[in-house]
Length: 352
Image 1 (cartoon, rainbow, N blue to C red):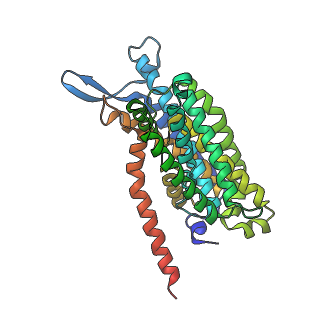
Image 2 (image 1 turned 30 degrees about the horizontal axis):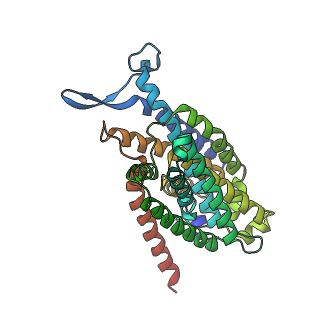
Image 3 (image 1 turned 60 degrees about the horizontal axis):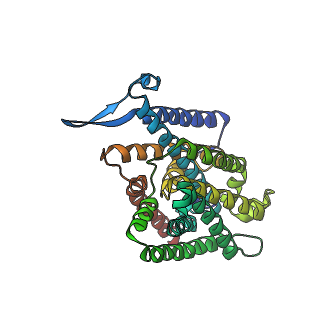
């Protein structure tokens, strides 16, 4: 078994599983309740940090309307963060690589290309945000099919060829997006750039409702395959030796993880690094057993994105930063730290 798989944690017991999930659920519930109450009030004297009381949930409270502007945004951040972190956790096991995340396989670039194309063709004007979101989801599905076809060797999806196919698709889609922007007018380019930065402002409950069922169904499917993920993290031969149908399981996990990313991007635009930061951090704390790591990652991703989005809407209020920019500022240095750690481990293995 690789060092990536065996790092951290001990044998998973029922008590340890219950404790980890109870703590994760409690933290998630606390953040979900507190986030819409946090904001910045703008007055003649300047700005001041403000925390609403629980009485703001009452219909007759003067801040009730403000609260219900924030609640859809918090619900969306919980959904999107959970989807991205769950998909990242599954892909890291599938590819046996701690640097793997939903954006590694080109799904983000494919979704972004489809959304940019939808704006350029006027689909946004005809169908609104739902048209762009639907195009982004279709782009994720299309990219999934192409990457899987390019990477397939026999009945298997080898990690190395998956990453190579994903990088190739990502470069192609990014270049195509730039070309489309170059041929667009100023207003179209502005809308494209705003969408591609990723954000949760102007979120509506109806949009959250549309995304809830597919995201929850996808996460439930990944949780169902937690034992198979443990086996796959040790390699396809080891997984096959304990009775896992490797080709089918690889395809299901790859498809569900990619569709989770597509649904998340359709709701909030491309938001990176959540699928990298959360699973890698929790793996060091909880160990590699996906029966606890996967649900904890889902809840941890929900918490992290909610915190990042709260920071994005308060740090420069009344202006609002793109949530994707905040996660990128956090995720970039984290990615470098992981890469340096991997190089050190590789150097140690190379000595002998």
